[in-house]
Amino acid sequence: MRPLSPGAASFFQSFRATRKGELHLHLEGSISTGTLVRLSTRFRNPAFPSAEEVSRRKRLHGPSSFLELYRDVCRCLKSSADYAEVARDLAQRLRRERIAYAEVYVSPAVVERIGLSWSEVQGALETVFAGHEAAGAGRIVVLLDSVRQWGPETAERVLDLHESSPWPRVAGFGLGGDETALPAREFRRVFDRVRSLALAPLIHAGEWGGADGVAEAVEVLKPVRIAHGIRAVEDAAVVRLLARRHLPLDICIASNVATGAVLDGRNHPVLRLLRSGVPVSLSTDDPGLFGTTLRGEFVRLALLGASGRELRTVLAASRRGALRPFSPPGPARRSRGTFPPSPRR
Ligand code: HPA
Ligand code: ZN
Image 1 (cartoon, protein in one colour):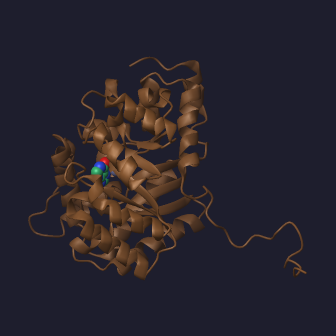
Image 2 (cartoon, rainbow, N blue to C red):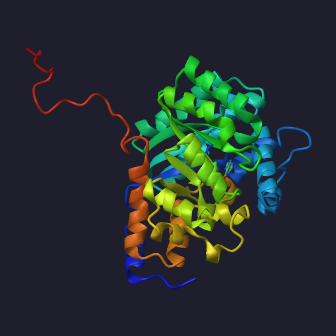
Image 3 (cartoon, rainbow, N blue to C red):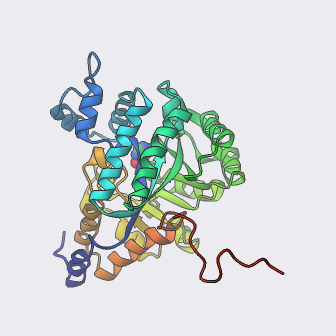
């Protein structure tokens, strides 16, 4: 790691006050340790009996131990009130970091798998997110998520839920989970439907799977952004494809190190991708589980050698890649002209 350049140091002086966004954030992974222990210890044989046990489980041994941790966290959620509690943890963290805009993956597939009603959970989340916005704390946009290893049928079910009761806060649909379980082409029809529902298609790829999986996802599913995508760096042609199409990667450096997607954080490819012309934004992914902050992500990037200009480019990429404007829709604003507008003749 290198010392910060003067440009990078000055970037951090204004970081807190800067309007920032993050585009890759999972609701369940935003749970705080306190909430996790409290929700878990309501039952016999808790998976997370203490903060020490949470710390132990957070020491991962690769993707499968991360997916098991994630599964066990989700199993602690037993009601829509529990989901609301996690949403409050998330909102509190966004306020603490002064994040003006966040796109948050929420998984109806997980909600139903743990036996809860999606419409109740959706209602509970909406109350928390709307309250956050009404308090002027920033905008929260939802990305519906399905779990790749649960197959296209589960993804279709998520879309059925959305189609039968559209949630205006939803702007996109993504696939997370074990990207090595099924190839992207299995989801071609799902993604055609995603587009027909006017949702932005997104996908986790190039995290634990290779560059070929990124290329297939791009060509077959035509996502508007890719979550992670870092292993594209293993194939120069795939990097050129991303750069040529201006296809943004929502990169999460601390997550990649924690899950073993990158074995040595000092060799994280984020700067190589950026310098090859690929749009890159930074996010925390699962801040409750990885103990990371957006500022921490930028510090990591700076320590990899990013200049002040590169840090600003990455910061701006979150606004450019966002599915909606940073400011929440406020109460109907008066137009500059007459109000109500005079009838058209
Ligand atoms: N990858 C795959 N699935 C996930 C992740 C991730 O980074 N975070 C939460 N679910
Ligand atoms: Zn993710």
